[in-house]
Image 1 (cartoon, rainbow, N blue to C red):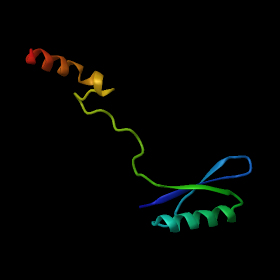
Image 2 (tube, rainbow, N blue to C red):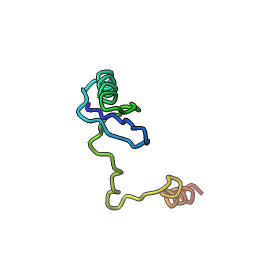
Image 3 (cartoon, rainbow, N blue to C red):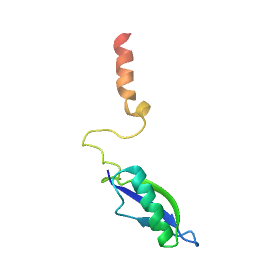
Image 4 (tube, one colour):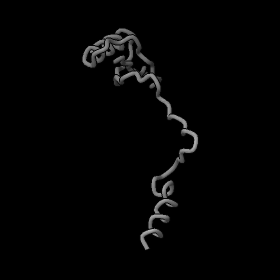
Length: 82
């Protein structure tokens, strides 16, 4: 798994640290080392996820809260039981 790090400078502007090792502890150590070398303050390391966006709904699939999505089905089931 790839990782990226975030560090900030004295004006609280964030900088991304790329090309970190694939293990978490190695990535943290390397990010801290690079941040100190560049005069930045280390913040955190996160895994680099390839797709960080919300997937669009599949055709015919409803979006929204579960209670509102399936309200019609619940009403139909109640009427069948009666």
